[in-house]
Image 1 (tube, rainbow, N blue to C red):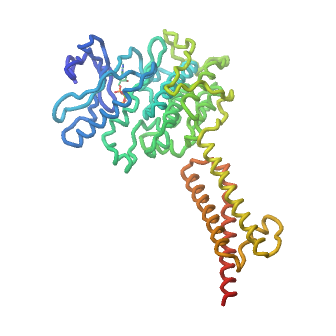
Image 2 (image 1 turned 45 degrees about the vertical axis):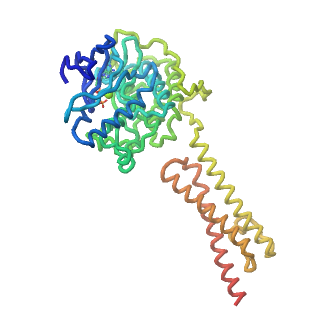
Image 3 (image 1 turned 120 degrees about the vertical axis):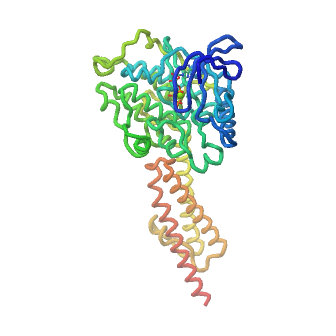
Amino acid sequence: MMRDQLLGGRYRLVRRLGEGGMGQVWEALDETLGRNVAVKVISLLAGDGSRADEARARFLREARITAQLQHPNIVTIHDLGETGAGSERAPFLVMELVRGEGLDAMLRRGVVTRADAARWGALISDALAEAHAAGITHRDIKPSNILITPSGAVKVLDFGIAKAADPYATADRLTQTGFIVGTAPYMAPEQARGFPEPRSDLYALGCLLFEMITGRLPFQAPDMVGYLSAHLTQEPPTPSSVSAGVPSAWDDLVLRLLEKNPDQRYSSATDLSQALRRLDGTPEPAGGLAPPGEQVPRPQAPTAPLPPPVPTRKAAGPRPRPDTTSTHTLDRYDVAAWLIILSQLVLSVCLSAFLLVSAFTVGAGLYSGLVTWIYTAVLKPRSTGLTRGTGRVAAAAVAVQIGVLVHQTSTSRLALSGAWPFFPVLVLTIAAYCYRDIKTRRAARSIST
Ligand code: ATP
Ligand code: MG
């Protein structure tokens, strides 16, 4: 890329703004409309051959989807194209030129104030809420993808671009290998495993907020593998243990975002945005925000009142929430978990009832006490095939429930504390049934012979 170069017959490069892992970003003049824009050339996807062509076509397809996003806190994509020839051929995207400073540059100069962190965090959450409502996950929330304008507005860059520019992510390869895209120091555990979801963006934002209020990341590691393993296995420190004076409400909010299990984080970016707006109103304790001397003086006044959130496309109005950031709100996974637990209970009660009723119908007498009947009340040698068949179906249903329980706990989808007490009950119920069924069949054989 060189100054004065013309891309797509229309965009004249003016000056280089920066360079990242995918390529360079230039300020350019759109000669058709006579306005300045920013052009990001994805040189990562340059190259000859059908594989490179395929990767570029995929990039353009994906980028076209993210270009649909329209929100004041999301940088607008104006155009997409390809430049160069042969092995130099690379896709580019043309964006709104933001006159602002990258959060990475701001953080290099020192910590930002907690009031700014809350304001900017809420504005980033608004952008995420809009994208998530459109089915788009950012996947690469990090300081260099956040621009702050002199008036204190926030623009989030590169929505979905990390995934789009992943040279290995042809549809089949992605599912086969779960190839990782994103930036290791900010990567959610599930994304590190190759399965990003919208709440992975909340985790990354948690890392970013941690960095904003303490001046360092929650985990420190020498390399990418070290970061990924820390995200997967280590408990993050509380922000207040890293930077004295951080209020406990901030500790609660950030640690909730850094939960390993996405179910335990805020259930949506909208909820997080509301929690950050409440924090923004929290009076600061005497003695300032960051350790003395680390405060960044800025000429602008970015702590101006926080604008209300722009409604997302689902037009979700503000939902009433308990007025504390650490309260776990009921989300759809909680509801699913409790439905499963309830169905397990109902099934085990049904099986137990079946055992009890069948014991009565064969006239074997009365059984007293729950434990006694679970272990002893069961089929009799003269039970009919229908009675036995029904019992087996009920036992199989309970076995399926055990399988579901084991699967869900292994994939961490279920609230373990709520589910485990039912596990031994279910296993005992099945064991009791099998034991009595075998005994009954033996007895039946001995009667018939
Ligand atoms: P990555 O390639 O992983 O996203 P990165 O975010 O560090 O890495 P780029 O996205 O290439 O790098 O951006 C490089 C720099 O260009 C950014 O730090 C930012 O300051 C600047 N920049 C990017 N887009 C714009 C824009 N639309 N307007 C103004 N500056 C921009
Ligand atoms: Mg970027």
